[in-house]
Length: 184
Image (tube, rainbow, N blue to C red; front, side):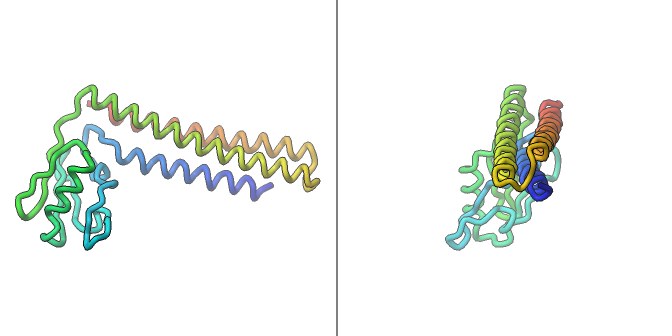
């Protein structure tokens, strides 16, 4: 039974970790370099994450500077950023690429908050899937007469407790991010 609980906690925690990673890609009032996490640059024929071919820094609340290690891929980086549609156009000065993000409008903030809620729903679905899998394992243990009916009931209750605590973590994490997005 302890193994089932451990399995549930580990897999539910992975859902929270994925949620946090997804939320980092959302834009808030202050620009974050994580908005470029999904950008892949063609580098010697291989799609490579931007942060593996260049230094990426947020120099202030609205500006990101990208300094490629290999100047010959400046055009490729520019193209990859434009295709990613992250909310700002790259400005290439031959040395670095600067991106100026305009202040977010109320409508953009609401869109980001809506995306955050979508990420939360995905995380909750993943957590519920882990709950179902864990409950199935416990029911199988009972069917195979490895545990008593009382132990099965306690096990299912414990899995539900674990699930509830992780769903609460999802809500807390997302609400914190939504507050951050909506703050002007």
